[in-house]
Length: 369
Image 1 (tube, rainbow, N blue to C red):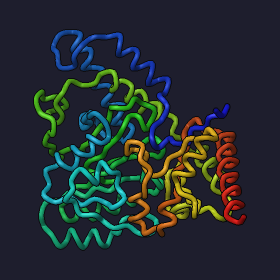
Image 2 (image 1 turned 60 degrees about the horizontal axis):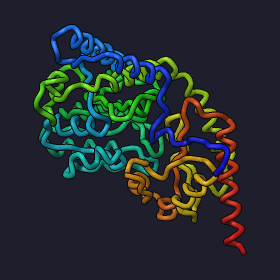
Image 3 (image 1 turned 135 degrees about the vertical axis):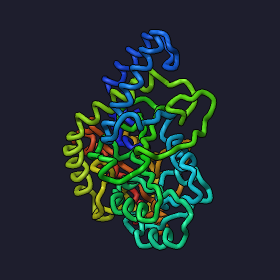
């Protein structure tokens, strides 16, 4: 087993921040259901409401509009199904939890960089007057490409449609103001910002109605039944506070990402390199070498990366994101995702480059032999 381990799969999940761990330990020391009216219950409720404010501050929206869920997937489902709109349009590069939430949703095409086709969206909304919800993520989890959410919101609102925006990958890596972006609904996930897995949130703008998918208790303003996960929510809040305070860290992360890409050999292809992207994400193709081969070889060298979204029970297959972007088959099969985080170092980048370029040289020599 290799002595050095380098984690470059931050878009899949992040280490638990010390502040989140401490907040969760503190919450574990107290007993109380946030729906109970006695003093222990009221104390638990105060903790949940403080956490709501912290999570809302990450995206600059009042805490009363934050609905805690069991994760980002549930939050996405609540947004699309709970909005009650007859018609759903989703970008072709959305996370699978959006694409599969409403199987009959219309897919909004994207260009070669993964940017949604605004003219197509406007034509489709103009052609059908039914109440609609449009779902386009702020930043793609595989490529890091940032969508023109403000422009999308203007189009959607001009036809009376709601805009749902999956902000899970962007949160903590770029400044977010839901009001400025124009999103009516936004989803967040704790474990992408240094909180625990199994906790998410749907942020709803004032006046947006939501029908609960889970019924039976009336919690979360009647939008999501079930006793709140007070321990996980405490960790989520602490992670959100730390992420907001340390967002400037990603200026350094961007520099590391750019150095990595600049040092790649000419044979490498960085997907959507010229498009606006998150500061931590590179989708890199090694044409002719299967992504699975690269992931395994890098793992043997102690480097952890993903192929695709890394959210499909360990499966490695063609990326629907790259397919929607019109990538050639050889690119579809040979692209890995390298994602950095607040603890990534220059030594991590060098470790990756040594292993990746070494693999490329070995395979090139083998093919030439």
